[in-house]
Length: 225
Image (tube, rainbow, N blue to C red):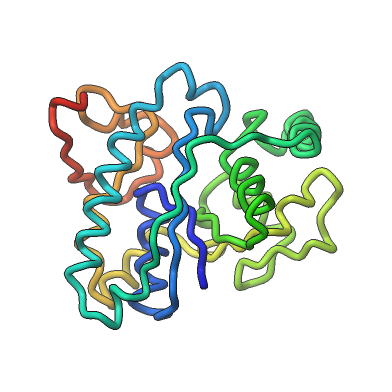
């Protein structure tokens, strides 16, 4: 079983579909909608992007249901988590890593994802490519398959030992090429990659927008904007 933290963005959608189309393994998406995800920087925005991410995920699920049974039956029910409470050890180690300049924010998604996996007693996949900032830090402690070697981690990063980063050594272009090869590239254009949408469109300025390599075709009803 693969557990995939699934936002509806390019990376997580591509890996979810790779698990089904290429690896052909049972896959459970984990969707986190806690407004504090990524820290309080996002809480006061209301995380409007959650609406767009939800729409993108819906389209991905619909795409999967259009496939044959050997693919669509591998997708297991979504686990949705609305609130994540960081424990004191997680909070303490996060502060150390932030003070050392390892993370640009006090708390990132990786901290919340770890807490979820620890609470559930599972290991999961987090998505980030070789060009992403956080993965550069993970790269120091992971093998070529993206598995993190716990024995190499300093005390303040031990939480990374629960993660696998499957796209650690790959670019988005390489991920897209594999999607084309296996026939699930069309849905990747309907993924959402923006933290601060404006007027129903990607802002074009945030970190997620700057990392996107294909057009975003997500459309949301004006009732949600």
